[in-house]
Length: 137
Image (cartoon, rainbow, N blue to C red):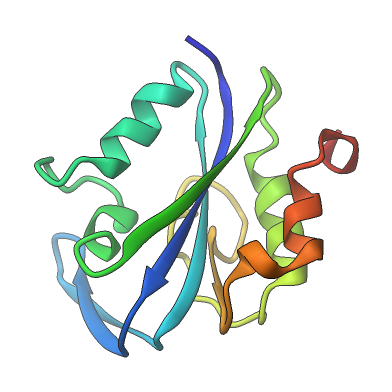
């Protein structure tokens, strides 16, 4: 089992309002691409597999979002270091800087861990370079 940071690259095919959490607070999401940055410090593979599974108990904000979005890619960085927030902030810096405040970042001081891209970030050299370990060390 490896440890590390992951980024789910997600495609949202249409504008949607998504009720999230126990309180079902509605968030508005425009169609486009999203990158969700998380960590798997016990097992990176298990965490990613959980996100890819359709049958799971909803626990995190991203679980609700995944009912509407498709995972188109998963980027990873294998590390023992807790650099999830650093990676998220770098992804934010190359995104459209349109985010849902507090989404996926309830246990840290980051404004969000879900970042919006109008077009696929997989075509964006700056996004791709985020996963070059030399940038985030």
